[in-house]
Image (cartoon, helix red, strand yellow):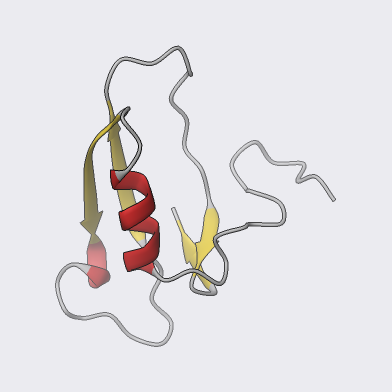
Length: 78
């Protein structure tokens, strides 16, 4: 089922992947120039109710940048 929101990924393929797996996959993409993990995942206050806050820095691309909300490791990620 397709999400009605432009910000939420329906049927997230990353839901069962770990953050480390996601970062490794992103690093392989030539357009990705940087990855910033912020919030509780970055400052060691990560708990059972925490989400992932990730900024992916892109180089020149024809794809319009956007905000995406998805799941990583069964946690909300934005």
